[in-house]
Image 1 (cartoon, rainbow, N blue to C red):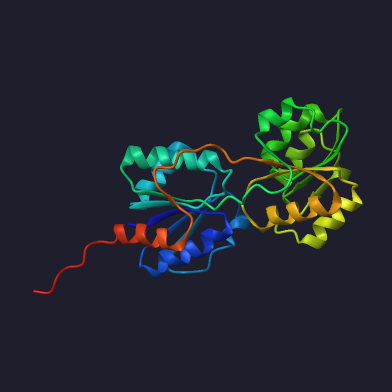
Image 2 (cartoon, rainbow, N blue to C red):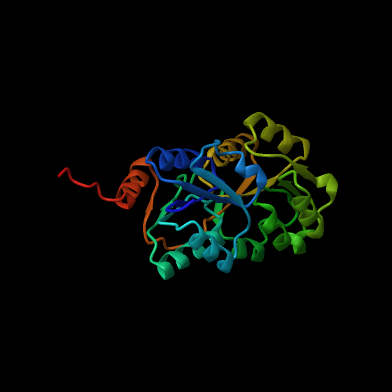
Length: 257
């Protein structure tokens, strides 16, 4: 697949972005990090979905292999590593780059902070805490295992379970489930575990809104981790911005003789 758009995917928004890329006649090369995420995308002769956690050298190799003409980064707001790599390669290889950034929800309920500040505070001491921050962050909470009762929601994969157990989590305090989680199930889980504090991410999606609603309803302390402070050279949060970017990448039409 040559002359493709590299779409960094894995989010629900990346599904319609892939459809838009294809509708504009571009081949679409989508990269995701899990096989489950690859199920977001429809079968299409111009779409290839690649499952791999890309390193710098591997990404550079695949960019060359597919003759990538531009990058649309629609990764999760907390996937800072791949975004930073894509921006670096964009500059190095002189490839146009667009960040699709899901809008932040306006601050509503609870405390907004970053992970280092949270871990240095006493906000979680003595609490029954539900962590919905992704399995990669669980190890950072290991030292709190003796100061709080920690529960975590993880993806139902062997890798996620091993990481959670390695971070000191009791298997009886883990729930493995694919998102999204409905308001009713979220409420039942908080009540079943008698949760008094929830740590989540500023993802800007319906899940964050559900947690805000339940925190007010149940009197639960909600702590929202702010997004990584990345500076994108170009970004949008709507369809029109993606369309404008793709139009700039389209080859010029030949005029009639």
